[in-house]
Length: 443
Length: 92
Image (tube, rainbow over all chains, first blue to last red; front, side, top):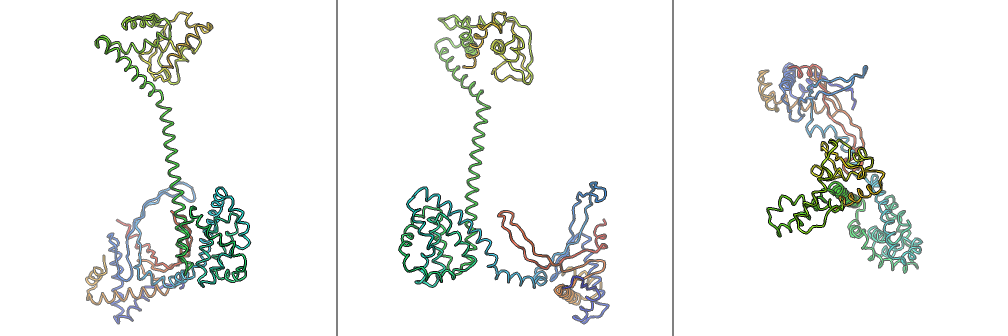
């Protein structure tokens, strides 16, 4: 097994000579030809398969980035072809024979490795115990007083069954698992770790010591076990009896099952939670973004219905061009309180349009909306108080859909208002503007 | 290229009979296998080095379950190409 033990082509040739009985020249010629052929074939990019040995193949190593060790500069290493050799299964196994045996031995002596998973099982049992104890304490308090009696003789339930059947290891496990829910503190947890380290046999000597008197208190426990089935351990208990004869291997199977189910459950809950969270966030975002548009849409719907009713009453031709104006003007007039109570709708319209035209005929100029400018800002700039933005809105209703949302590039005309209306020091003017604001926002 | 093709090619090149070449071929593979099993490495001039390397046991982690596992030690056949072979392969 020396790594440096090298055999050269001459040694190989001698060996072949001995086995085939051919001349040195023949074998030498053959060998040189053989490797020449292989390399020429590899040169052509072909793979060479030699039965009984393996396959020679050309593999292209991609160019890759690297760093010059001395200068630290990134350099590009060129790609190159490389001959790889994959041994056939027979050769691979033959070479690995000594270690393959070792692996087999390890497999047979695996119980040493079992400690780790069993410890995990013990930890899980602890967790389950604590959970179940919580549940029990929540549900039935009278059970807890029974528990203090338990820890004194925890293994006793095994004892009555022990004498009946010599295959005790099966029975003790089943009673222990049901016990766990009833034993909140941690008396069983030490038991479970003990199980893997020391086989169940050491417990059997204990059994003769205890069995005489205290059996009666334990018998009530076995009836209690049926209560536990509500708890998640019920699937385990049926599994336990299957385990019996060869305790080690079934435990192996048992652990991954529990872990997998545990993980799957937790993953499932996690996924469900995340989905719910996303939905909630989406709803909130939708609400925030589309609250205004929805309101507008709803308003439009309502307005259109309102306007439709007059259409039925009057000639459709008359009302159609006016219905949009009608919607806007009714509100404005209400706010301004200048509106005159009217009998007919046509009169109403004319009356309503009047104040608007009167107020907003004269314009100081136009302002183009940029990022961040709002009607309130403009109002403050021109009239000294942000409350007067309502007049801006009314003057530019045709270009502003929503007073809270101004589109960039919107051209807003600044109306020339009499100073009495837009006097920031006049409380009446401010109050009036606020009243109009309420009307606008309230609609 | 399979063994059969290799044998016929060598037979053509050397002028030997196919049977003989096949026999030599079998003897070669057997000899090589024996040497490798004995732990010897085979150095072939202008071709490369076929050797048996020991891979130490190592700890591996299952990427999905996170389960840790010891990969047992093993012996592996490896091939290292000769620089001349590499050159001949890489020239175009």
